[in-house]
Length: 574
Image (cartoon, rainbow, N blue to C red; front, side, top):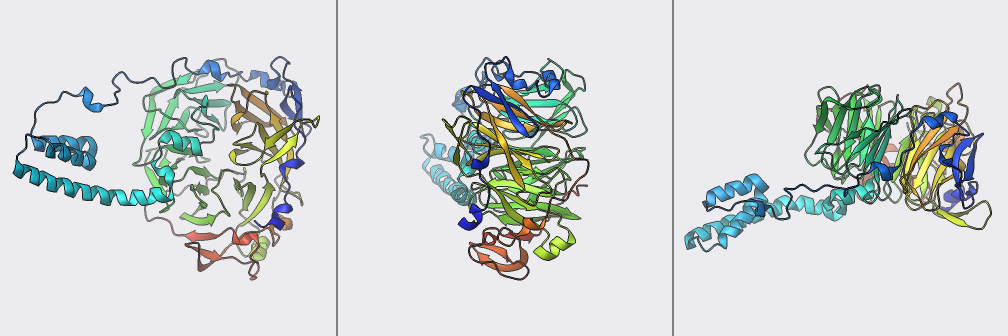
């Protein structure tokens, strides 16, 4: 983005000032965020603004997590697997066979090297074994060449799963955090909390019972999602699989008879995103180390891939509320928007500088907001015929807010707090009128008003949510079933879960969010199929009503291109 375009965008410095020291933000009422002294008894409930909030259980992460270490090591665990085996004299063919079954070709190569160095093998046998070891070494080099090339471009491909989750999880400081994921049910007041001891706790509004879910395969949890319209099914993304929990419908939420289903795909882990379609008929899963997104049929649990070659993994995948589009973000500047038009096809985009840090769909599925390089951008779909004629495309992109790092003063003007920068989590409430953003290095949560019909900015500042002086936000999520406005759930580093009610009147009718100011020439990015090569990619030539944009225009920073779908069988999602 050029400096002229960036200077016209609103910044975080326009937000209301942060509460003074000793005060915390507790609720929104009359389009203002209200604060109370932190010395007030249980002030974070916001019950003075929304009395029903007292029915929400006061979760303390320090009491939920296990008193034992994060992971309980197995009594059979050993740093040296061979120490658990009784070594017996056996022939070379049997040793090679066992090595193949245990570690594949790499195990065979290691076994041949051990036999070659053994003193019990004759000279002729050693020559044969040496030749076989050379052949296996060449095969290993050939098999490792593609992965080494991929690692040179995407270094995270050789990271451990813990490091991958630390980099791409929606939770700030995932490895040291007491919480790993939170998820609200879409039609019930159920909140799933994934903890760092590999357990899931279910908090039910109005009940003091907090059941626990644990199984052997549930390791390094990074995400979770409830199935819509089904009260008793929860999907959990783990180190190398997706676990489907079937629970009872009672308040106790105990595991049912056939309590778990384990979904696995080769190379699909750690699982960084899981999400059900709006009807609950399909489940989406993606991994930062796998270039394929898998769509699982929730009846037979068959899977079908949505694949793009060379993406270096998909750490972020989001299904639109209508289930007709899927955002797939890669660890670099590239991302795709898959769209279901009789069959799934993708459109490729390139950001100006860095990868997508966080994203969220609006409730209608017609707008996708995402954060990258200190700015929030919006992709606007489903244009009217007049808008399509003006923009010469079926979707447009524009920057909507500048969230670059800056310092904001408190109410007294004595202290300044750092806000902005890299975004860790972004969530849009179900009504479509509030957007919350959590930064990777800030003590505050920024809340925006979404102006659906405004002829000015699409996002307007509402305020910052501030916690106690010794805590910072770890992750956020809006409650999906809330009729009084919006309810933001914040997990703080102190172990506190805060329910932040935002009370506002909902409009009685839906309005079109696109206006002429949304596609001004200097702000709009769009594409029209044509081929030329730039930075190693074949991209469409950008234009606006047939006119080429200037070199300083933001249009040069984004490119989109329709791509054919992979030949594998794909589900047609209604």
